[in-house]
Length: 197
Image (tube, rainbow, N blue to C red):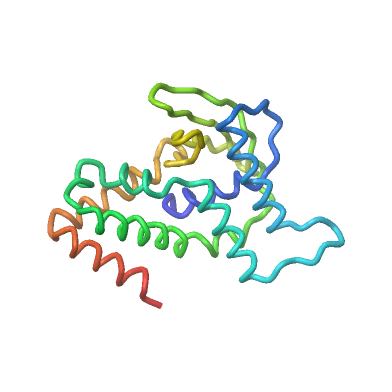
């Protein structure tokens, strides 16, 4: 259940307005959220886009918001260097597609949970964290966006929900696969999973 809430909550949070003053990292997160919100909840009198158009828009926003290469790198950790450049690129693309397949339907089923953006913390080495809370009928769920600045652009490389991150969650799974398989075999396993109906 926690695996499902990670990515869903991350995109839900992008689709809500915030009251906090915004620096660069928080501004990036909020602007992406405005685009998702406009897609999932069009303004009164505006025609609702079809499911395919919604998916295309959400995919476009996610691609501009998330640094999938950094996400893949931090997920594999020290095992990243076991992949050659071609394998690294393919793993990154397959990993992105896996996240999309697992969570797209949940994102499209978005409801009216409230998300409050609370704090932006600048960290060394061109990193930052944006803290927020998902407000539900049963209470608040803490969340943190971990962001990295590359070439003057802030992008998300991890999302932490209730102390557990996407990176850490998938790291255990891929490390387990790599203890029994070569990097290429891991990629083949991931490709079959992504390509299966």
